[in-house]
Length: 627
Image (cartoon, rainbow, N blue to C red; front, side, top):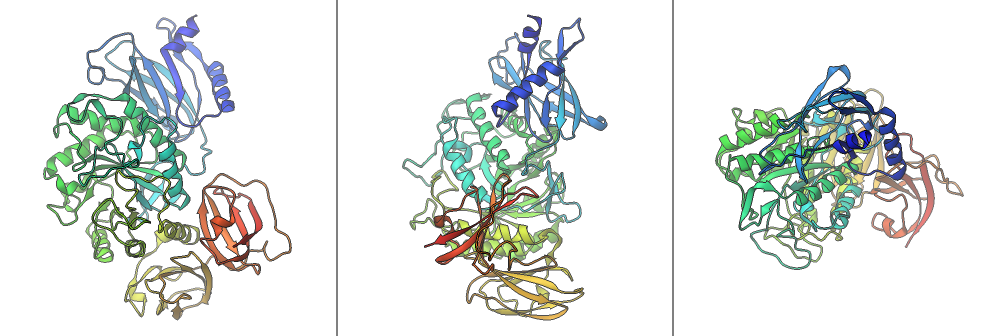
């Protein structure tokens, strides 16, 4: 009975995916490591295995009652880990006299904790967590600015981060009553399969002012973030059912290895907000930071279109509040500029609490990014550069662009050393057609794969002076060893190569089809470059690595099949029967059909190679007939 009472006092819950065998293992760990200490106080302590950087929830319950548990009592825990590292993590109220502290260990080894609260049942509770090595291939720890290359990002484990964002503002506001997340998962999977690494999402929004209707219009959402209604809100209390749903969305992004770029506020989506700087406003900010800081896939953004907030002292105050409550120090930014009002991110007296710049520009993109890098040595993310028109020619917003125009702007930002974000008219706002694949989405799968599979883009810098024909063309270079050349309309140019030792291999990519073709080799001197595809935007990589021309297992009479394929997403490479590269794309499934491949190659018989995302993963190779 004593053990049962102790277990009821302090429960350890695992957040995210847990299969039955893992659950049995963890339950065994509870029994194996639980010992009673401080016998006079009757407090429990045990160790349970948690993977490095993975959030886990600790639940605490009291018998006391409070008029407003969101404001009348606080709960914190100080965690001490290997090397005497400490993290002070605040707790949050989840209902039924229960609080949670969400913790993610940052180092492998034993961690202990002790809680602090004015309530005697919640305070002075001790316990421990045993951190084991991370096994999830797309989890890399904290995202930070790359110290060696400060225009770029790098994870805690050393992996570089290629920021390719998608604007899915309403992601956590779709069917809030559906615990399976069927529709949000559908759209997340779609973007993950094309190599997107971040999704921009609202913490909360109500409706768009331009008005929409229909079964796929999710504004207003079917849950309110606070108690009461949007017309008559009770900002002193949170709607725990809504935030439980939001938890599931953030956790799914974590499982998929996608950064959740969270807008705390939005000024034009109809939300009846708490007064700026009030205690209720702080409750909203603190709730978001407290619930989600343990996730390593988090970026904090104060507000979407913060140029509409004239009180910069208020922005500064709330950014500092985020920092003060975030033990993990996730990256901070705000969506700014567009030439309206005073630019917060450009003010050196204010921007010290921003880690990188987020902007919204649609013209002069290359020069704008270059100027923003010169203004401050930090990464630049242009999250809103164009709005791709719907597949049916329709739109939910008055401004629309062709898929080709949006892609061209994407490359302008990228070739200036910045990072771009993608908008599709039926995904960005409250009308979310979660099953509809935008006609232009495949372009970004090609782009992401080409940059990340071939280049060390984060070591290159913009250098258009190396090009003979600069009209619409750009170059990223690490002089003497690696070059990325973008020809916006195909055609020809020259590239000055100096300091090259030996020779550089080259690969062209068709930006519309993803088709790759070998180029080179190249040595020092002036290289004449001509894109293989007339009037098509093309990208050339030159470097010391191998080209994709021939795969050694191809060109034989029978396909080679190997076991041991790792988790997805999967890279799919297509070769002709002579072993020459014909195309490639990213898939979320370990099987490829003719229907999948026909969007990437012409009719014919091909070899297909499927490769998982874990180092050392085996390949699956087979023939495929594409009609």
